[in-house]
Amino acid sequence: MSLKGRHLIDPNDFTLEELSRIFDLADKMIDNREAYGSICKGKILGTLFYEPSTRTRLSFESAMLRMGGSVLGFSDASTSSVSKGESIADTIRVLCTYADVVVMRHPKEGAPKLASEYSAAPVINGGDGGHQHPTQTLTDLLTIRRYKGRIDQLTVAFCGDLKFGRTVHSLISALSRYQGCRFVLISPNELRLPETLKNYLIEKYNIDVVETESLEKVINEVDILYMTRIQKERFFNEADYMRLKDSYILNRSKLKHAKKDMLVMHPLPRVNEISYDVDDDPRGVYFKQAEYGIYVRMALMALLLGVDVNVEGK
Amino acid sequence: MLKVNSINCGIVIDHITAGNGIKIFEKLKLSDVNFPVVLLINVPSNRLGKKDIIKIENKIDLDLTMLGLIDPSITVNIIENDIIVNKMNVNIPREVAGLFKCKNPRCVSNFDEYVTPKFTLQHANGKMHYSCNYCEELTTYSI
Image (cartoon, rainbow over all chains, first blue to last red; front, side, top):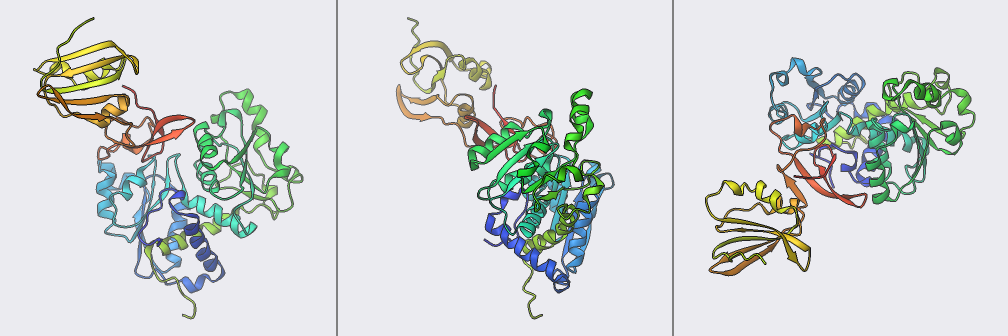
């Protein structure tokens, strides 16, 4: 099915074949970025950021500018008509006439889905509260595919705050659809993956899940280690925090026990959960991951807009 | 045994799980109407052991979706000239709009007045829940 005119609200809105099409195009764009430098000439990206964001917004803007398109929008709801109490439906009905594709970040969960119901232009969810962040998931999947050559048959560990981390929820839901993926969930008891999500994925996809509090115990068996930031205020008491905090910091000495081809990924920004001494290790791919985020957003927008991406021979 | 006359023209809501009759009576605001209504509770039933029944001596618009939400075991009989002209089973609705709110305080449907909360029936952990169409939070309806 064509992706032209579609919305991206949840990573699982697209079939695996459709995701492959996005990744195939992103791969071509990585190999030959200049060739795609004008495919979106005359197209406008509308950025509706109801809460602050630096890298997601700039990544989208960079992606559109690199394809020859233009960008307009707001990055602070207090300066827009939203602050006057306008409904999302009214805002999007007007703004979708100013732009050809829209990306929305909103603190309320489900806001981009609501916008998509009233928008004539494709709406991309740029993050809605603690719910979904689908373009981060696309970025993560592309990174895995580029480094591992596949997305299936992998043991993927998620480490840190698995309760509130929307990137984890989105990625684990998306990976569950690929054959043979196994999950190792590493978190303190208070920050475990929500039971409802875990049980839903087990029932629907029969996924294999192991839960542990210790990164050291399992690091030798994983293909991908997805680190997330863990905040002190998430713990219920100081004693648990002191007992467990080092358990969720990845450093070079812990990496010694990991597979030689394991990938360390992180949605960024990091604080201290990955020591700086890991940055030089070839297994740490988190900065490359952020770079791939631009290409996957380029490919996504080009396909949602339905522009001609066949640049061979031009 | 208590005897209640049959109705000539109206609606009988039958096979209500015992205890739910008063909830449906209140939900339909039947205490405010100006025609006869009978609420029977703890009536012996072969199927349910005991059941509640509501007899309404008038034709009113019933929201079968809402009745299904409250109690899917209900049957609704439409009576005309002392005979049942239509018998309807209510089902647990697959889609529900506007009948209850999402329990997620961060859901957009609790903030934007333009939104009608919408839910889709979902089976999870061996139970039936409603998944919010906006934020996917699972909500169980109760009155």
